[in-house]
Every structure is written in C-alpha cells, then in structure tokens.
Length: 319
Image (cartoon, rainbow, N blue to C red; front, side):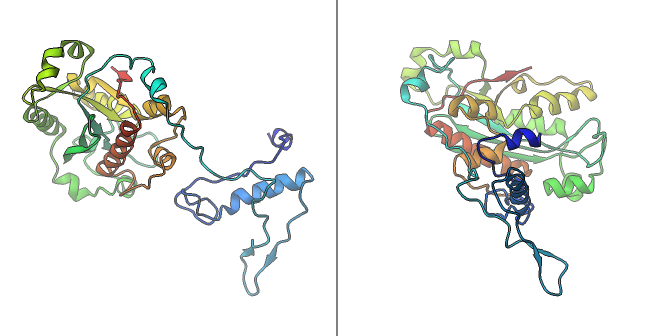
C-alpha cells in the first residue's frame, strides 16, 4: 500500500522493467529514461514531505509534457541496479547437497521448445511444438559441440496466429515445410545414437566403473541430461501434446535440469528468467528472445559460465 511505502526509511526508485520502452521504462538494460518509475517515485517523495512539488511545463506549440524537470535519482533514492552474484568458494561448492559424489553427466542437452500460441484465452489445446532445438554441451569443457534443430509442422492447429509469428519470428511457410513431431523425436534418437549418448539415470551413474574412467575409453557411451529454462517444456508441453495423440513420453525426456533452479542454488540468487540470468552474469542477449535456437544458445552460455565457476550439473526435476 502507499502507506507502507511512505513508512520506509527511504523511498525506493520504481522501475518499469521492459525491453520495448526506453522512454517510460528502463529499456531492459537500465539505459532507458524510466520516466514512469521516476514519476511514481517523485509523487511518493512529495507525499512523504521529502521533496518539493516538481514543476511541469509544456514545450511551445506541443501537447507533450516536458519532463526535464522531473526529479532524477539521487542519494535519497535507491539506485537501480542488479545484485551482484557471489561465487561459491571451492569448499562450499563441493559441499553442496548432492555434489559430494560424481554424477557422471557427460553432456547437457539444452532444449527450448517454441509452440503455438495466441494473445487470447484460452490457449490452443494442445499447444503444439513448432521449433525443436537442442544443443549438446560438454560438461567437462563447457563447450557446445553439436546442434540439433528442426521446425515442426503442427497438425491440430496448423495455422499460426499473428501473435505467435510476432513473438517467435516463425512464419507459416517455415512450419509448412517442417517435419512432424514424431519425425523430429525419431531424428533426435538417431542423433543420440550416432553420438553414442544415453540418457542419464542415477542407476547409470553407479554403473560407471573406476576401470572405465581409468581407460578413458572414447568409444564408451556418454550420459546426457536435458536442460530447460523452467519446467514447461518437458513437464507440460511435450507430455500434453503426446497425450493428445495417445502417445507416451520417451524415457529420455522424463528427467531434466531446470537451469533457473540450478542458478538459484549455485549463486544464491533467484532469477526471474533467462534474460535476468544473463544480466546477472554481465552477459548480453545474443539473437532473438523466443527464437528457440537463440534461446538455447543463450542458455548454453549461462551453463558454460556456471561450469567455469565450479557448478556441477545435477538433476532437478522428473516426471
């Protein structure tokens, strides 16, 4: 409430955190003018008696309000900034719950579906996958070694909404020439087999013998675990679409790492999403947000940085 805000020791600086508006908002990266947030803050300062009323004027021959006199952030305001991450010490990192013994996850398969959607409710049922990208990231080196990428042709709701195209950048022609979800799943299984990859399970981890590790046999199978930004991809989207067609979820897609949870547990900061994690790590967004392959590449950069900082991947979710 306003009363609660006025009772604070200092009035916080409000920020409209949006990429699409650098005038009234912060422009997502803090470079925007943030006029709306500053106006709200100014009003609170005036109500609390900590500031004189701001003087507003209009430019000659213009109906636009001149906001040059609006109070700028100063010592009375909390500076707009992201908290700094704290790297775990080597001892505390190794002592994290579940990390006292190796988990033998050789590769991370970074996955980010894009699916049919619209700007009205209810959402399409089922929401159908239209982009199926995966990156193969080596957990020892932090390097991406391969990419898997298909566009998927929806069959229940074959026509994309304008909203969906605007959000994802995926056009009707692209999905029309895509493959079916069944074909994409089959092709990914072939991709796994060609790379000698097997899904990670706790049981598989125990089967990794010391003798195998000593030999460092490059022909032996390597374990992988999916990584997603959130749980929607593998907990909701894929199972619901397969269930609609009376199909079962393949075993490989039943375990994953929610990178937001891993990030929170490792850096002790709860991230709001992918772009927030990038910002916390002082990284720029590369490519287009909500392009599946671009999001995978950005999530891969986050995972690589976490591995460099001492993170040891660990399963967070399953179905």
